[in-house]
Amino acid sequence: MKLFFSSLLAFVLSGCAGTQMANPTVSILVDLDPASVDRTVIIESITADRAGVLYAPDRVTGNILRVEPNFPKPVVVGKIESRMVDGKKVDASPSGILFDAKGDLYVAIGPFSEIVRIKAADLNPAKPGVAQTFATGVTGANGIAFDKQGNLFVSGGASGIVYRIGSSGGAAQVAAQIDKNVRTLPDGKTQQAIVANGLEFDAAGVLHVADTSRGAVWKVVMGADGKGGKPVLLAQSPLLEGADGMAFDASGNVWVAANELNAIVSVSPTGVVKTIAKNGSQGPLEFPAALVFAGKRAYVANFDVPRRDNMDANGTTAKDGVGASIAQIAP
Picture 1 (cartoon, rainbow, N blue to C red):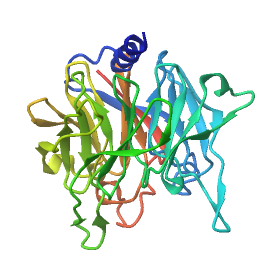
Picture 2: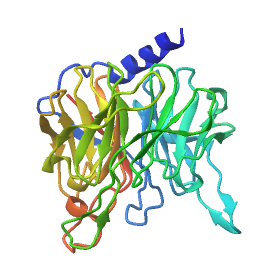
Picture 3: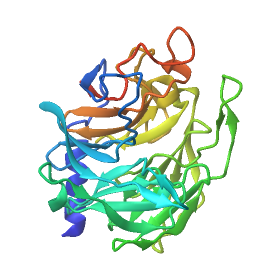
Picture 4: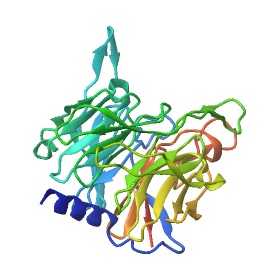
């Protein structure tokens, strides 16, 4: 039964995105930060529930925002509280976010090296639920993905480690390793070392890992013991510059948020890379960090970092864009 609902959830989120969109329309669904340049709201990830309602964690406040696509007004339904660490207040700065088959919500918290959980019943705008620790020992926790058995996999950023957490939580175990890599970006000074970022399983249960540093996507076959085999390069391309969050469409293509390029690209099962949508610093894509399919549309979390194609004329900021927001891609 658990496997059935996991498969059902994957079907709902992929929705009707069965064919790659030709000439898609990209627009802003909701502006989450009207001040824009002040970055009063920062989102790095996005997910959807079975009904296609969107959820995104705010890195500034730790709030979990719920957005109904048909009435896109953000509502706070959960909270990840700051903590005192070594005598200092540390914000959660949440990243990856995902539902399990039961409707519980999981969020990766890099500063705490944890995965936290908010039970489905506690996602309540009248009394937002407070996240509780689900798993520990996840250094650099970033992207997250469930396999068909309900195990949670978490990317470890620059370490290249992919962690595995059983369905009951607890201490994370190392499942796979992407070789480390550090690359200097075209500005000549920014160092990009994140080699394990977005995570997604395909329909066959093969784990895909976004390598931001190399501009690449890896495939990792997981064994019955939860350990991954040697990573195999699916694609590496200039079109994957800043590969971040990912999502599979129903045709088996994985869509990748190429944050440095303000672009969404697709990678076919044979490694063919194509641009779905791309723009300059004025949006509607602004350093896109993650995406999710719901119904016939893809929804994108705009992280709004001033780098590469997300710089305005002065070359230092992105003041001419919409800022933190959720974009939508429609066929």
